[in-house]
Length: 191
Image 1 (cartoon, one colour):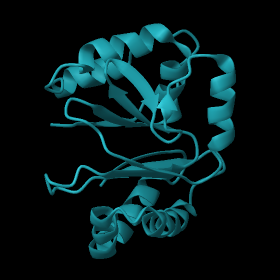
Image 2 (cartoon, rainbow, N blue to C red):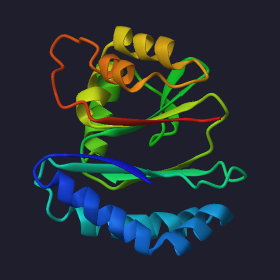
Image 3 (tube, helix red, strand yellow):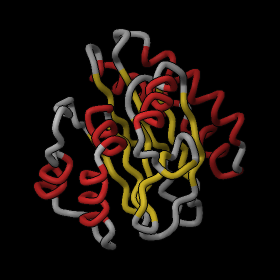
Image 4 (tube, rainbow, N blue to C red):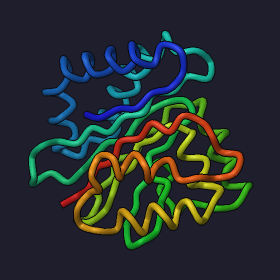
């Protein structure tokens, strides 16, 4: 599991979620292996709600459950609050929670903002070469609103190997006028 969080109490929320997922890993991985999405959604929603109790009203926590088994390509993205699970595939960005191509219009952003207060879940089967990006709203917003930011990251991340740590940090800090929020992010390059 990898997770990102923002807001007061974020560190504790991630610690609680990681511990809960660790204790429930056998059942969660069995559900993931069997593709039992409703059971998985229910279990992850319960664990997320428990972990998010200490977050303030603007807090967020998002995570991806990705088994180490190379024969299981199913990934489970889940979370609550501002933030996103995005997928870069075929040189285009997709909102993995919504299951559609990332909308770069203001109305699409309004819809994403409306969804932020609810628990979000999506089972994703990424293809080799795809990148799953888990991020706080400080990076999700410029990716949704600024085509230049989306294009820059797609250009750098469409290669089969992830960038070095310093390059990754520099790339997620791409300048975007009016977008200076926290840019916590974790990415998974699919082989």
